[in-house]
Length: 150
Image (cartoon, rainbow, N blue to C red; front, side, top):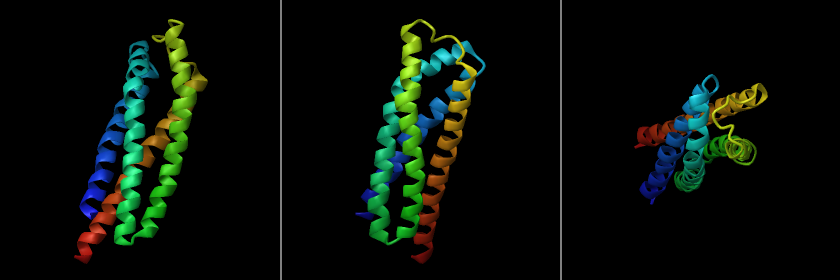
């Protein structure tokens, strides 16, 4: 079963971290470019559900995996990181996304975002980047600990 739990976890990282990377790069490029602002607005419609799918796959697989190998301390670290990632995802899904969709509906999707929104999205990017990569690093540490024991 550990294999299946780990497969579910890693699949979640592949889907979630891949989508996060795409939208984060779009968002950074969109800070200074109307072209990339519009591309970000369009791209987030695809990446947003993929990020949520990846989050729930990685989290549920991780819970099953860590409980099966008795590394509950590392599980707690993951749960804390994913709490931040989910809070960040809620902000992006329920504040940023509707804001972008409203701008698109009004025909303003190719205009740069206001500075206050750019700052919020930059902070969100930092939470996203450090959370996903930090969480993946914890998973790799756990796998290396298991490999060391065996």
